[in-house]
Every structure is written in structure tokens, then in C-alpha cells.
Amino acid sequence: MSFFDDLWKAIKDAFSPTPATAPVQPCPCKGALTPAQAQAWFDKFKARSDIPWNYPNDCCYNRAHVMAGELKAAGVDVGKAWNYAPSNDKALKVSTPDDPKGYVEWGYHVAPTVPVIQPDGSTQPMVLDPSIAKGPITPEQWKAMQSQPTSDLVLTNAAPYYRTEDGRVAPTPGDAEVEDIFDQHRQARAANWASP
Amino acid sequence: MPRARSEPGWPGFDAMQISPRQMDALARARRAGLLERIRAFIGQRAQRPVHDDELAALCRRGERYGLVTEQEIAGYVVIAWAVEAGRAGQDPPWIARIMNDPHRVASDRVAALYKAADAGADRQ
Image (tube, rainbow over all chains, first blue to last red; front, side):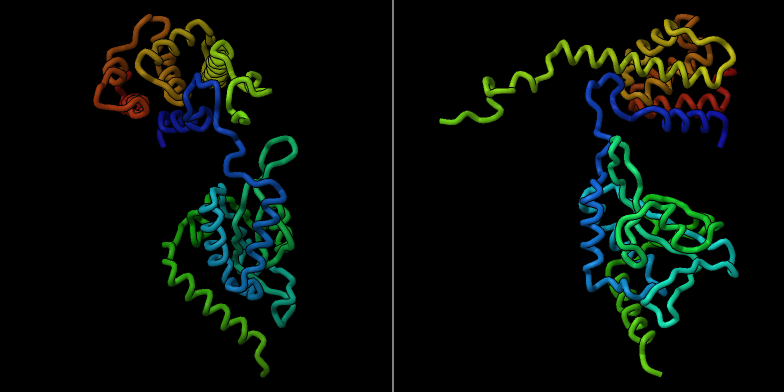
């Protein structure tokens, strides 16, 4: 980026794309949810039997993709929170009754975020992750649940289906492939608990 | 027959209207706020003093070029101020040529200013 590229970018960040003298401006809360609405979305997703919430070993990217798509279709300004383990020998770790070991470990984890309106009128991104939480939580709370203080928390828009820690993204699969992945994970969940 | 809620004369109807005078006042306040933010933006990056009357003149010139949004006006004013086009009373030819290009929409003209500055047009 050259000096002038940087300058133009800084101007676009600092100034609105709306008419300079328009007496009305878009509501900053456009696309945001009240705390009650965020909880209602969380509960609605949690109640979905087609999404394998009880298979925390894998599938977060597929769950995040489906939730984000539905939130976006409803006009919510949805994003995603990504948490990356600091190294291979320092995996993210979450206690769960949904694995025979009582915990699962991940190299990374992802879930959708929604802007939630605060009492002062500002918005705060909140993570919707029914696989490990009981309601909407802040990205920092969500990261803390994964037991690696030095993990790398990154907030993005909703677009990446899979994102590496250095920002590379994988192509988004079609609806049929997304369903296939859910099927595979439901079967893997059953195998998790099969008698030896 | 009950009146529609939007009908003049309904209790509270007048209180919900923004008069042209109020619209003008809001627009003036927005314009003043934009000028102040442009002044602050430049002030954080520039060595020489920033004068409001110079910026106001550049804002008016930007609007005469058909710039509408905050980004367009700020983008033009920052470049024009940097080359001292406000003091000179007119834009240098390379800026005037881009800003009068009838084949580009306003936002593209402002973006083109930065590309041209990057390519050294301001030093030709």
C-alpha cells in the first residue's frame, strides 16, 4: 500500500458514505439485535435437531455457516468469531458432557457473532455458540471458555466458511455438501458413544 | 368515521413533523460537523496550520464538482488542501481535469485523485 492508498483508506474509514448534509442518517443499530432477540435466536438454533450440537468434536464451521446464513437472511449484521490455538501442543480445550472423555480439544473454533444493542445505544458483538454456551456471550468470554489465554481471537464478517489463522479462506460448499457434512457428523456422534 | 393516524389534525401529528427550517438547521449542523472532522483529520497529519475558512471554501468547491457524500467531500478537500489549492483560489490542472471528468461518477473521481497523486501527477 502506498502513502496515498493508505490516506484514501483512512478517509473512507473516518468518513461516512452517506450524503454530507443529509439531516438524517442510517440508524447505527441497523442489523443489530436487542439482548432478548439475541437470546431468542440462540434458543431457536439450540432447538434445531438437524444441527448436531452434541458433537463438539467437529462441525463448528458448518454450524457457524448455517446459523450465519439464517441470521443474514433475517437482516442481522452477522459476523464470525475465530479462536486459534497458540500451537499444536497447546490445543483449545472445552469441558463437555457430549464426549466420552468429558472434554474436547481443538486447533481452532468458530461461531457466529451478532451485534447486540447496549443500554447506552452502542452495540457489542456477542457470540452465538449453542455447542458450548447457554446463551449469547462476548467474544472474550467465548475465548476464555476454550482454556488457552494465549489463543488468537479474530472477528471477521460472515463470509469465510473456513479461515486459517493467517487469513486464507477456503471455498464455501453448496447446500448439499453442507447437509452431507452434518450427516457425517451425526454418524460420528453416534460412533462416539457406541459400545466397544 | 375515524381519522387515519397520519391525517393532519390527529393529536400529535404536528409534533411529529420536521419543518423545512428544522431540516435546514440539521443540514447546517451536519455540514459544520463534517468541516470540524475534516479539520481534525488533516490536523492530525499536517505540519502547517489548518484554517476553517480555507476548508469551507474547498468544501463548497467540492460540492460544485458534484461531490455529495462525506467520503467524497473529505477525499477531495484533503488532497486539495495538501496542494494548497484553497490558498491559490483554484485547483491545479491535474485535479481540475479529474474532477471535471464527465465519464466518472463522483466517488470514482475522488479515488482517481489518489491514484493520480500516487503516480506523481501532483509533481508534474
